[in-house]
Length: 90
Image (cartoon, rainbow, N blue to C red; front, side, top):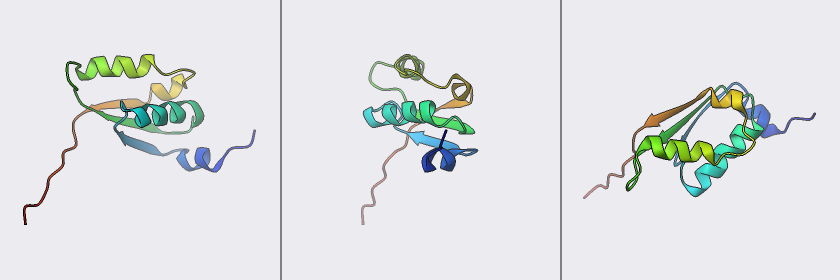
């Protein structure tokens, strides 16, 4: 089986993703879990949103993943946090 450049690029690397529960984030996480078995660790920054806590969002994210690499899921870490924007008032 011929490996693509993307699979080789991520082999042995760790990936940190913000926005993993958003539309494009879900697509990216699913693609990495399915196609890149050589990823060392996958870190997902997650925050509560509206009436859902992080645990509910995590359960929803995992339940929506189809045909995922279960070995990589064991190396996936979920980080509670939030990025924030700061604007300068010059």
